[in-house]
Image 1 (tube, rainbow, N blue to C red):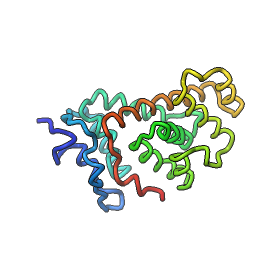
Image 2: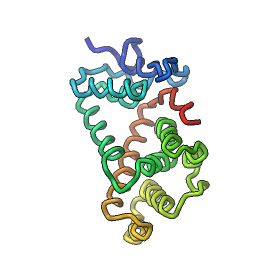
Image 3: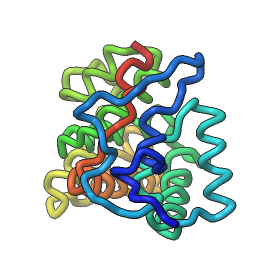
Image 4: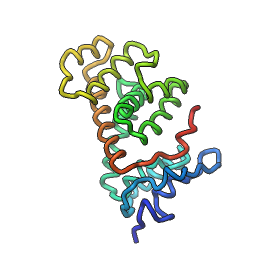
Length: 218
């Protein structure tokens, strides 16, 4: 019998919010960060691949990211989301993993996405080893002391987010002059598009981040 994901105490979403962290301590969700989403969607049957993926997250991270728990009502949607995310953010690319996370945060800052700013802001802090950089990009990437490559990348991602109809060849030329290949430009655009989509789903469902993110890499 499927269990309501966002309300019943045994659901994947509720468990994800209270998974023990790696140290063995428990990081319960704050009262205003439960339930994981505002929609009462029954948890679906996970495929063996997604069950293994959830276990991998638990083993590696110490918890299951709430965004995955939120998608668990529909295995096909969960698999599609996870595949696209992993391809864009973790697969080989001319962009470093830090650069990809910087795009995620700069885009999410424009959209004021609470979930993505919290989760990916923590990842920027981890990858960069610089909590200040993580906070600067969350608040206003222009305040950060970025190198010309990073600044051109984020300028493009933000323009594509805020005024996509105004992006033209000169904007792509700025990226080429900063050292990006045409394949890199595709990746910047794809990551920007993905997080604009993800931000809107997160905001539309009132998706809440795992509490553990707030304290990471401080």
